[in-house]
Length: 138
Image (cartoon, rainbow, N blue to C red; front, top):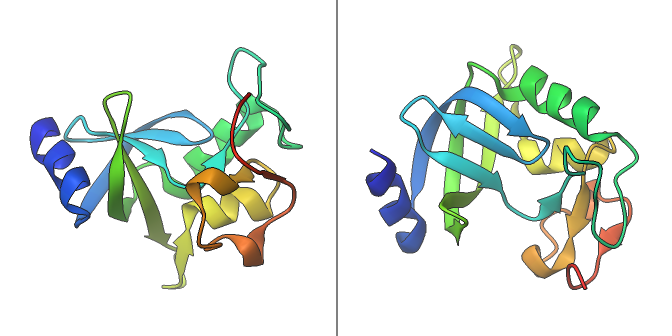
């Protein structure tokens, strides 16, 4: 299944991910074993490091928020590529009221992550953004 999800990443297709585990504020694992890195954002690392700017929310709190938003829910994802044996994707989940929530945007708007402009060149997250990383880590 993991290889199938990685193949999707190259094709830019959609896939569903039942979220089994959240690693940190921008990475989660599906029940089929696929690791997903959320597109366009950067959350603080669990070891306390960050790149140019740090999100206001600490790493453990960012992970807790992504857990709250996505754990055991079905995420609908659009694969954009691969990174470190992970599928990079835009993912959304449905709220209990039936409203779709873009996970990247929600994490940014709640200050758990920041927009990483290099990975959001078309400005998809501009309406939810606070500070951004212009080009990425030094």
